[in-house]
Length: 436
Figure (spheres, rainbow, N blue to C red):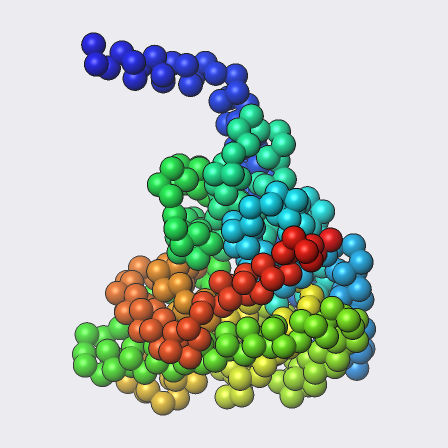
């Protein structure tokens, strides 16, 4: 007798037209996000490759394209796609805190999603040191939030759940890392995670991940790794060294990006095209000094290191500088892929110091340490690296490195980068100063 009310509620939910409308719209969006993320991955990869081919064929033309292209992207962003600048994750986080629906719409919309994809690919075509993963989170959150008008339930909690689900779906499809998608939404985008959002998140991640997998095929972002860590004291000292070094450099990078964003924001508002052109000139100089290795996502560089290749000792620092300059130019683009590439370069350099540990192991430790130092989300960081390289045997060492790196980074950069940049963005979207 006690179960009958529960059965009646279940039957009403199964037969409710509004509930089915909600499910169909939501499931369709999750599948759409997966498909768009897969096409975004193909387009950005193609754009990145085209610039490197141009650089190999005509370096002078490539060096000229970078400042001119970044200036044009900055103008297009301010003129047609305001709100699409930067990584996009700070905008999504800020949207979770904004109560005014009109202000949310200034950073999450179909228009911004379209601009984000187009301009990020354009940035890679011009040699910017940016990634598509953060922008994919922004695209996913924008698409999911934009369909709120078609849903029968329009409460603020539902809107927050849609933004979280869209962002999680985006990171899952971008990296082919479904578990990391869920963790990133919990650990970074919404630090006050509500249990009732869990079902929405999981379904979104699964549907988008399956769709992206169907389009791109089964893959791991950096291939499969057989790296292992010897069970010795020297091995754990290597973890400590990598974690402290990566966390320190990652924290310094984040702090410089936060400080630079706050300092240069007034100049970008007044002279966006000139600032972007100047940053483009700096990128060309950095690219010249690195023989073209600092351009683009850094994906190929990291993959080559994972396969046993070598790189210049200056690569990690030059790539850090190129990523800072690219972000401060005000164009759309993320820092995920460049950060992983920097971490791989650091790990390769650590191998010149720590000769008793396999270099592939040090590369993985460098990636997770630096990436954690940048984003300060240790669980997401080691899960992303583990899923991207299929290296489950390294779970405990990667986890230890991530936790240590987070603590070290926090000493240098007390406020996590995306939260700090979201605060900057919230300052831009106060009712008295709407961004549109």
